[in-house]
Each structure stands twice: as C-alpha cells, then as structure tokens.
Length: 179
Image 1 (cartoon, one colour):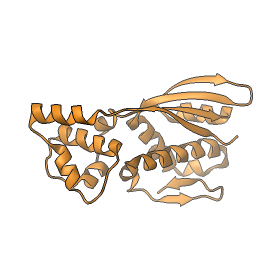
Image 2: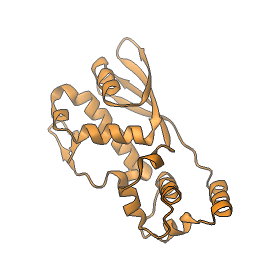
Image 3: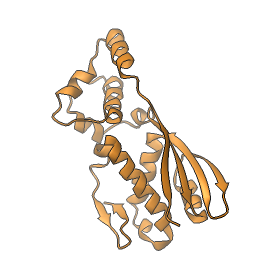
Image 4: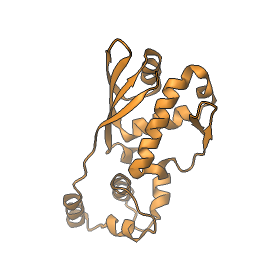
C-alpha cells in the first residue's frame, strides 16, 4: 500500500497582530529585515525567521542563513497535523522513527493514522531517517515514501531552506534519501 498524506491542520499566523505587538513591546521590526531579502519567503518561513530574530536578538543577519541554522526552539512554534493512510509496517516504522503523537485506527485494508507535532518533530523524522543508509532497504519503502511526501509538503509550504543543505539521492523506486 502506498502511503497517503493529507494535511489536517497547521498553525495559522495572525500577522498584523503579531507584527504590531512585537514592534510596540520590543521595538524590533524583523519583518523589515525579511522584506529586504531578495528571496521571497512563505508565511511559515517568515514566521520561523521572525521567531529566530526574536529568540536570537539579531537584527541584520541574512534570512537564508538564519533558516539554515535555525534553533530547534523556533521550530516548535509551528504545529502540523496529518492524516496518514498506510499499511501496518509503515505505521509501526512511523511510530518507531518519529516523536510525533499518534492516534491509530485499523480500518481493515490498512491503517488510518492521525499524527501531530511541532515542525521540529517532523523535521527530525525527515532528516534523521532519510540521511541514514539503512532507509534504502526495501523493507523501509513505505515509511521512506511517507517521509518523502512530508519533505515535499514542507518544501511546497516554502520551508525548502530548512532542507537546502541536503541533496536528494533518487533510488530505483523513485523515492529518495538525503545526502
């Protein structure tokens, strides 16, 4: 069974309120630094940069470099919930290889898994597993496919800079590992 990934929810950011409040309380305006960057960032990436600038109290560092070295604490502010349809083996591998929280239901032809956690948990699951050579084994194809889908989702969400230090190495089955 090829795992399916459906986004159920993700953190909604109230930008006007956040920008105004932070500016009034701290005097910082990280958004102006981000706006000066030649690279356009998604709302999620901009939020990560925003939290990094507040957390690290930096004012002029290149936003792309900030994302490459983003502190884990900043990733904990973005939360994602996914509905995953997969087989038993993928379900077991997923639970073993991630720190996300799960509700699992056997639906006869497979499993319906509701997984939730902050971006840091999903990031770790992707990077720690897809950079390990053992993940190329056929027995990990289901979880590898699922982690590939998660990575591609986060890249589409504009968080590609988090993974830009890794190269995708395509395998025969069209999935990939990170190197």
